[in-house]
Amino acid sequence: MSEASTKFQKTIMEAAIKLFKEKGYESVSVNDICKKAEIARSTFYINFSGKKDIIDMILNDVRLDRDDFFGDFVAAENDFERMWMLCNRYLTVAIDFGPELTGALFRLELMGELDVLDTTHKVDEWMIKLAVNSQKAGVILNSEPAEKIAPLGVDIAYYTTYEWCKRKGNFNLRQVIRRREESMYNLAPEYRMSDEELAKL
Image 1 (cartoon, rainbow, N blue to C red):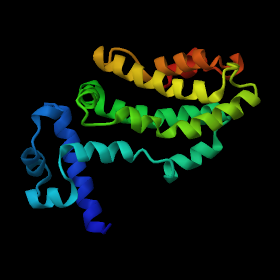
Image 2 (image 1 turned 90 degrees about the vertical axis):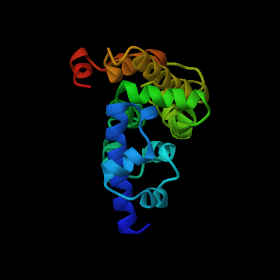
Image 3 (image 1 turned 45 degrees about the vertical axis):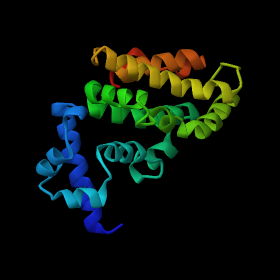
Image 4 (image 1 turned 180 degrees about the horizontal axis):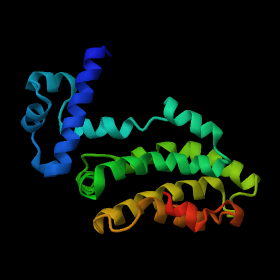
């Protein structure tokens, strides 16, 4: 992809997200995005097939090979913290979008236009391997097979995010998910976050 194309995509995505947050996903047209981004419709369609394509690109951009993620991932204290970092990549998108826009994505998924759940489960293979290592190290005390509990951790994050949207963001999403996952995985006490650490999430 050319540098110019990358620049246009970034400009379009930034304009679109601002509008989605201000007016709601359903109320924003491609014309609105073009006007906000100060581009021609033809430029939009060279880069995206429609509004949904923008959301798809953002969700798929939660990549694991980026320098800003990989260094922290390698330096994490243990493999459960690496599991938490994978989960947190998706939570950051939801929190950045806010409960209204994230809720619109759930509605689009119910209509078959997005695959948010499938996207979040793309990390299952990593989560299973990390859960196995965490069980061996005595960090995760839940003795159920890792291939059963690791996808449950993803589901907990997904459901809690849905609940957060329904309640219009009236609780700290990261704090609630962290506590629920610590409980489900039966994390050894010394690896659970203290109330002080939790308050910083």
